[in-house]
Image (cartoon, rainbow, N blue to C red; front, side, top):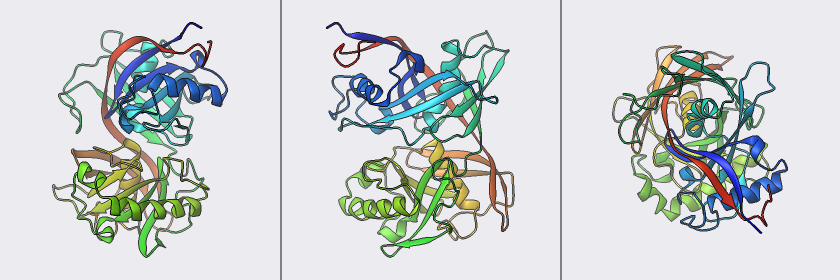
Length: 361
């Protein structure tokens, strides 16, 4: 049987990379969709040798776009995290880095019209329900990719993509603090279970015998840390109402330490079976929230901002990421919006092929 070609854009979004599809070009049912994505990425081999994945969790991500039926949004963004060495797809999380490319991709696909020198694309994150406004530079009627914006973890510079997130609290679990409190104790370790943009379990690096300043490679080689962290993450997932998370990439896990370069906090973010080489956009929002929320494990570690709005800089293995937070302090703490600047670049366009026996199209 002939192979099936599926149109796609291959893009870098923030510090991640992957194919961006029109959702209408893919199977409707989830089982068939997963098989298509597994074969397109080449999941099940550490090099993704039979697909277009890059052999790491940040290069096996997929964005699927469609015109939105939401009255507020222009486009729906459905995210899939495809595994590297396993034949598996997780639709529970979202990805803020891949989101950086959604605005440009929607314009490239003709899902949203260019409206001027800058085009505002209103995006609904299907996985979490978050609403995001993306501002894309379009001075000549098409997305601009050249520019002077630099982000840690990406060489060179590119045109800025401004992202402003709203309705990010409780998108997955239904509550900003899904366990009902700012701090829990699991296996003798203080943790904060927080759902802002992404469900994350946060702990202090020192409680695992870490400094918090280790690089990603050293942490990935630390089997003792993962052996202790993963059971805590699974118990936390159950307490957060997420059920058995042993086969899921959520909740993520992060360890915190005092800042060393003038930021608000130092963090190492786990995906969860590998340390992120930099920092996830959604993870940064969750960590920044912990820095301004009373009673979390960040208290006493993070630099306390003077008030809202505040720019919180999260230091990570390859640099830092800034999060502009608007929040209500006090006993009725709430997050209003979180803003970031990222970059994206179109790398290729064409068709990716899957065996016809997998999907005939």
